Length: 370
Length: 178
Image (cartoon, rainbow over all chains, first blue to last red; front, side, top):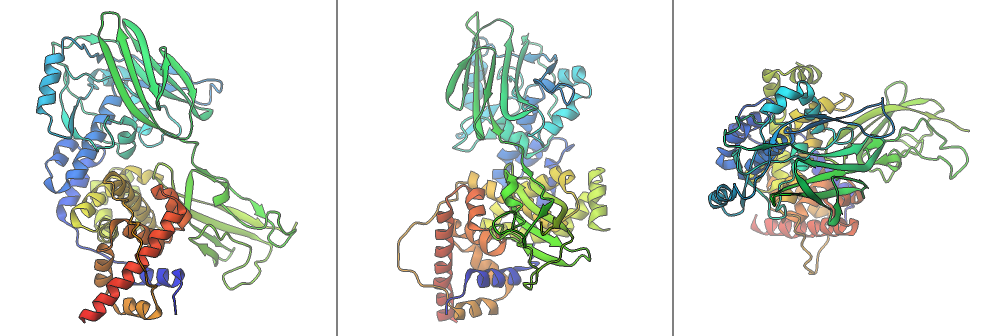
């Protein structure tokens, strides 16, 4: 006889319940080095030969946050519902002087191993001084992309040299947004070399607080002659571009051409998604008119979240519904097939959002016959 | 120290609490990572990435569900990212005559030790293993798996079907050698 999939599930889940495996003590050290507040995270990680894949990830993350810290923007909150107001915290970053830095850039290319790219950190030293408490806001930006602006800024290969980042073959360019989503590693702080020629360069990607898919792409460069944007392959010009994006990852490339022939290129990837949320259900009528509000289906009302477990309990805390299969929502019957009485029930759910973050929540739902 | 106390202490920046939390769940999570990775170095990378994210996102844990379930979700999401980066969603589309698992096979698995089952899963081809883990052990539906790993629902079903066929073949081979 052929066992069904549920039998296989039950078997493997029961056999593997509580399974443990020995853990290499070195992993804890590597984890520690990647935690917020850990000094020299990238250096520590790159020293761990056993974790080569992770090394690239950590370095990229550090670089991402480091670069992002060079310019800090704040978006107005509830006070301004009409449009995002960008409060610029003036930050001097080192602009790329193409001609002057050609030799240094070539030297970096030579030193980069095959498949690796030399990535430079923009300094955060001056930003810190000028931005004051804004860094906390930026730290939040790495964890909650749905409510704060995403930021791209300029770096410069001729000035600040830091880490080599191994880049995946399918990621030819550094993607700051992705890296900063993965970790909250603090920005690296380095002294500016005296030979650096500072120019004011400001770049920002700002999400509209009222529309999760509406973005402003803003750039300002001292002697800019033109701005060339490429956003998911489409070309745009001008120092400010406002777009409503399709949901998904968007690759953004900006080239700023200065009047003297210098140019500056910045690239990043942003994740544009509607805010992940689970729409609360307050009441449903499983035993009322058939076809209308018959089931308690949280997944159907979820946006950019996949629920992998929903549990419903009655007033006594007894579980009446517990399912990992959201294609089979609660129909008002308990686990033994008995009709649940008209009453208020508590529910809890667990899931994962489109950014890979775990989502948990709870609420109350009333079974009503009307 | 309870999980809630551990979480609170971690959020307050206690390194000791972070270590305690890690020590408490790292063994279980290593087993999860080994199931997805198939080899130790990749599992270690997944563990490292997973726990960094756990501590990074710990503030988002509401305390409503079990902590271990939440940690597991985070670690699995990191494992999937890792697999995707390594381009190991290389699904096997080979067409061959497949045999279905039978109740005898299920009995054979039920007699196996936990370590033997872990080893069996680790030996699965990458594409099968990911879908098998997500469907059979984590309990995701094929629709969810399709969205999680960005394949079609039918690909997920096909890979699970083939994973079962692969299991059947391996179990038969094991039976012959014992």
